[in-house]
Image (cartoon, rainbow, N blue to C red; front, side, top):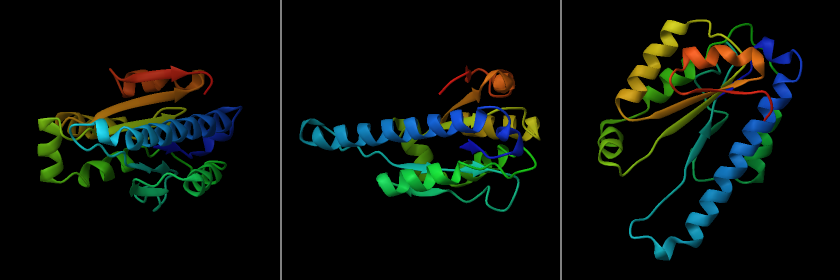
Length: 176
């Protein structure tokens, strides 16, 4: 989940977030490729799927930039990077993608997460305080209660509020 609120345009925050998102997508792609190479050696099949959201305080917050799939080719990565080059949003509505992700988790997924057959990890990049910290923390509680791992990376020193809003899994990165 990436921050496209207007404050991201200040300093190097937007560029650093874009780099971090690209690096994460590259790491996921490499991991998925390694899983495919090792498929014959695995006792249970493993599949890596990803989706990317961005928030900018409009009706696009609940729609992924990249839909959940195993696809993470060059086209998908470039499309996401292009979208992350701008930050038109007036607010930090990070809670909307979190709520959307939670609502997409069905009972079967919850059961699979509980049994360890499914891992769901959410990484949020942001530079500042949420427009509704209470809603973020409610979403975090719901997601974590069903076993979803949620980590937030505060982009630059201005992202330090991520440490408290997303506690205990907030981190700070001055550079990607």
